[in-house]
Length: 318
Image (cartoon, rainbow, N blue to C red):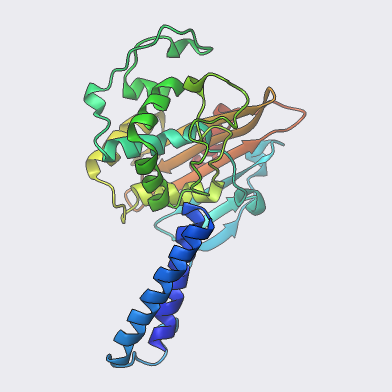
């Protein structure tokens, strides 16, 4: 029985690997060969070990409870979804569950991940992070100057993070998204040529309406993996990210001020906003609340990442 159980684990691991690493005959063959060898080794080990106690093979971790919640009043007719995960309660609250499972371009919310990869790999020192402006005039005035990491994060300066991502490199970045199980883990369009809104490489990338995609619910899981109790990332890295993500507003209770950390993101196609995000977490002594709000295109009204942020704050306050 144990060998069958372990064989199932090896199959699951192989499938997860192939989901992030991509497909292809050579990769598929390598996965199958590794799987067969691992299963053979485990079978040999199992034959010399005592059997597990009856019934222990089928024990699984308890899945978090999911509560479908009506937050339509906060959306005021906008098309979108909201996902909250309360770590203390071990519970999800989701508005528009089907929409929450659909993968979209992460846009500038991915700056959390590119910053994480740069910090963990020694590419970024927040205290010595000034980059020199090329002199090119960009559409956003705040980008037209020399700028450091924290400033670039807060004004979502694309050219800064394009440079930072290139310095991390595709291999290290791939390792980071694989470890985080970040959506489809697809960095294949590294330069962002699939994004037809710009032909200026300083303003394109795999994370901007391109190959990489993630669902709102997956965004919440990624935030938990970075900032949760079981995070594998250093406190130094988490503190630097929190300083960059910290919202200049807070939710006041009678005895406590709840700090909110997050990042907006917005994607445009054919002149219309198709993705508007705000994702992050609220810090609480009893356990963080991780969240994501996504808004999509709607004919009658404009959507924005600022609107997504306001919806998130209202929901968190509630």
